[in-house]
Image (cartoon, rainbow, N blue to C red; front, side, top):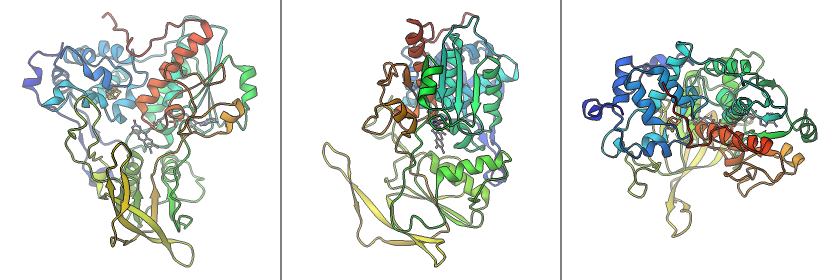
Length: 488
Ligand SMILES: Cc1cc2nc3c(=O)[nH]c(=O)nc-3n(C[C@H](O)[C@H](O)[C@H](O)COP(=O)(O)OP(=O)(O)OC[C@H]3O[C@@H](n4cnc5c(N)ncnc54)[C@H](O)[C@@H]3O)c2cc1C
Ligand code: SF4
């Protein structure tokens, strides 16, 4: 498995990036791939450690040491088959996953972990280049029809798995194009949208029916779905945006990140009629929220030509090392610096926004903050307190609220009579993805709350297994941990 002494011989090597000054001139991806020898050496670093903790670090249960070994041996087609046995869309995760597998890699205990995510991306890109990824239509069709509501990674994974089981699958999407947050959340500089289109062409060829511009619950009601389909899986995401209800939040210039980013992705896609233009050009921009969405707002604002970009995070600055109370192989809370952060944003931590300030025309001109402290409370969440005398006024003409999401929409769920959990997600157990209504399932962010692409794909795959079992009494679809090693 791998090269026995590979981890001693080769250091981790990551892809380099085009210089920030160059890459911010457009919205293209900017990573520079390693060559084949370098990639094989990276695969050789995998230690065959006996118990591959990376498997359980990956929410898909990807068979990581096996594809690493295949890459080391230059058997790229074999690696492709291994990878696709557990992951429908490695081209998404290979670009966008925060790689919890790498935090669980045994080599990572005292060395840099194996560069699993980059190996994954290169396996799938090699496969596309060589024409190894082709439509796989089911040998025969059942008489069952399934509706998938929502075309993000959860919906697409569920659709492909259910189609493989022979069911006739229709994916409904209210946006004009397929992809969910892959298309309208994540900026092109993180993933160009031809990556989605390339995969979509295969899904269509496999026989999945896509209907865009259909808002289920409005254009089609739950009763219509119940009549037409044998099962329904809701993959509508966690779309309710968290607000910041402080004075001045209605000023012109206080904008939700998830209005700003989707508009920009449409602009990059060549859409002309965008309504009120939300642009950062020549503005002092403050991005409130330090997560992925905040980071994407930074990269986008810089590409617009913002005058300055600052980023506020209410939590304290984490260290760069793994905290002692979050030992290997768990996912540690540590400071993560994205490529967008490095493009010219200044980051501020332990800071809370108290008030937006505007001019007489209702335009945002600045905001007021206070520093905050988090005090530990035994057995409870830490308590937030303001530090007296730390009020500060900041100049800004655009404030982007990147505060996350508070759960699922209710229109369609109410038509079905679905129950919600205490976090306003649709209630369904992770053991079978069944809601309280027979034949209605839920997967992805709409079930687990805002999360990750890798989790959405995993949930879509798992839900498909349980839907197939519900329809047919049993299922041959794989469950997590049952990836099938191809014999090549
Ligand atoms: C800006 C941003 C950046 C992110 N970056 C990353 C990242 O780098 N890495 C990562 O792993 N994760 C990232 N995430 C999180 C990740 O995108 C989500 O966890 C993932 O997309 C969830 O997938 P999903 O299929 O459950 O839902 P979504 O991707 O949200 O897709 C849901 C789809 O359902 C459609 N829909 C909803 N209701 C209806 C209806 N009634 N009728 C028809 N269609 C409907 C929506 O239009 C949408 O297209 C990011 C999220 C955001 C917002
Ligand atoms: S999907 Fe994410 S966690 Fe799984 S192997 Fe790939 S990078 Fe690692």
